[in-house]
Image (tube, rainbow, N blue to C red; front, side):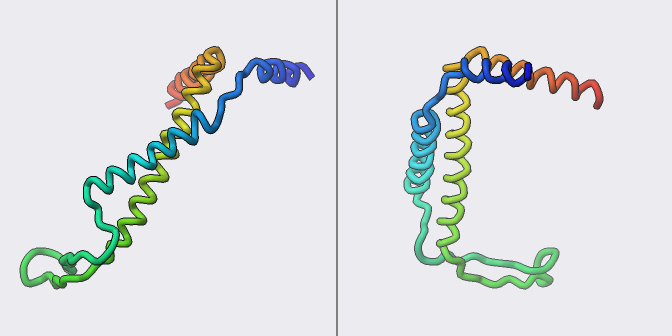
Length: 125
């Protein structure tokens, strides 16, 4: 019963952070920047690209090389993956930063606990 009351008292002092303001908006901005960067670099997403694909070891006659056509639609997959990962990282990081700004004592406790865990795990390496 004592630990439950302590946790409830600590939780009552935590200031809530807006998920939209500190998480979704930075994530959306990052996604737009990734798409804009790909557009400004001229990454093609339609048509095909010719590429020489070689099979075999060594150089010269031992290798079987052929020119193959590769669809540029794979670039859409890569842009999507990079955009989702980058925007997720930025969104989560900015949300944690907002939580630390509004709750500095809680943030200091979290950092202290992480440092203490690193010290203890370092003793047993």
